[in-house]
Length: 455
Image (tube, rainbow, N blue to C red):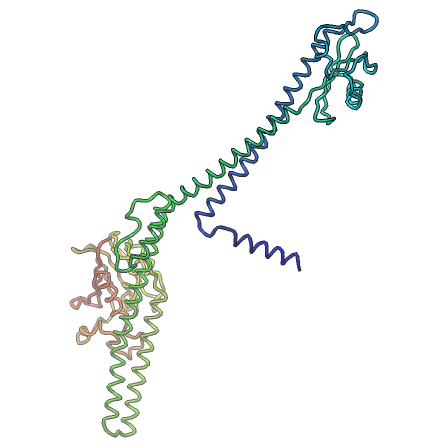
């Protein structure tokens, strides 16, 4: 339990110590990355430098061994060391052996070091070893033709000092480079994030609905341009959602006004003077029908709002959208539904086109005897869609009430519906700059005409 608590505390401490800004985090990542890279380079550089210094020491030892070899006479039956001028310089840290074991000459006062030289000479061949005897020393054995072996030693202190100096210099250079990396990274990241701060300030100042300003209209780097395009899409969607909310609120208030007025009128009439039981029951019936109508209106509009696809303003290929809509099963599956016409582009999203035409197509399939035809054509102002059926048509007396909410020509005709489809289709078309109209001169059957702006 204590181990878990310690890990939790360590994690919390690291989280508190981590920079909270993107600029600080990127600078920290760059600093850590540069530190690891410089550590690897520093270790590699000092390893190469140390190897090079050791190679120089070995070359020095071989040179001295070659000089000592010139003072050894191997022509006689026994080895003999010749005396020359500056002999004391050659004899410094030099051991001469006859064969591998018999020591002929050694430097004075070198007991412990002589034992290292004896072991090195006894192993034979050309070998080198590093020993720490009163300081770091490098010893190398060099066999000489004629049976002699020369062992030379060299103090490594100057070389070690040079290696330490290189290490300190590289560490100081690393520290300077890391400091410069951190400062330059913070400056570069701060400059790179400056457009982001500007975009943030602009987003706080703009209104998502009223303002026409968008991030895509400004010059930014490619990454920020893509971010700006995404933000513009979000702003357009927010604007669409708010517009849809206002539209739904308007539709609810418009549709509920009529049944609510009937309820208020009945209540006022009922309170005006005493009524008989039959009159009271009639008033209750009217109020109940109006309340049921209100509930149906709410259910219809809310279901339409939930099922509707909210998209930003766009365009729609009319034929694919209408053919997909005609494949939906409607009452009276024996009907033949045809869709034809040129492939035109309407200036509304596909979902809005479906929501405008769907009530007209459902109404035509409800009353048609055998066929329903949907025809697409070009109009002077845009695109037209005609929905025609071969049913009984609309009674002339009811033609002027077709697009009033809650009105039906014959409520007892056995077909469902609340009388909201046609009014809703007209309001949606008008909200997109189009229109839905009824052709009173068409016979037999009924024809509804939809006009929409071109895409």
